[in-house]
Amino acid sequence: MGISADQVDRQNEFASENSLNFPLLSDPSRKIARQFGVKRPGPIASRRATFVIDVNSTCIAAITSETNLHKHADEALEVLKKN
Image (cartoon, rainbow, N blue to C red; front, side, top):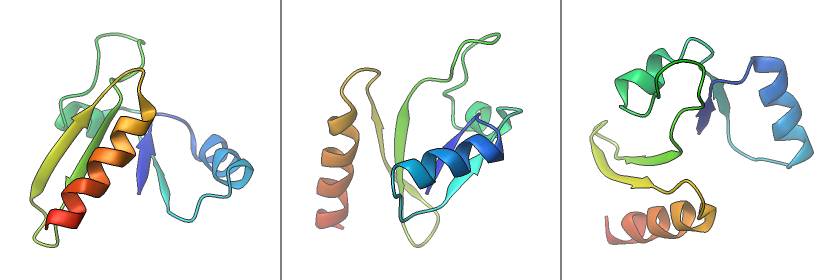
């Protein structure tokens, strides 16, 4: 799943435009971003992060990069292959 501070209608538009086959969640209050430690102060966008969570709800990897979006997918897939 994906999650961002965007409103639900914007998430739906993004998912449709990009033919995503996974759910997108909306966190406009940034409560979840705060819980995962990626919220920045004030109105600045949250840090970009990918968390790999196993079937026991344990976070087994955290991938961060503001500019290299491929890093998120590549590293997450490597973690999944090993587990």
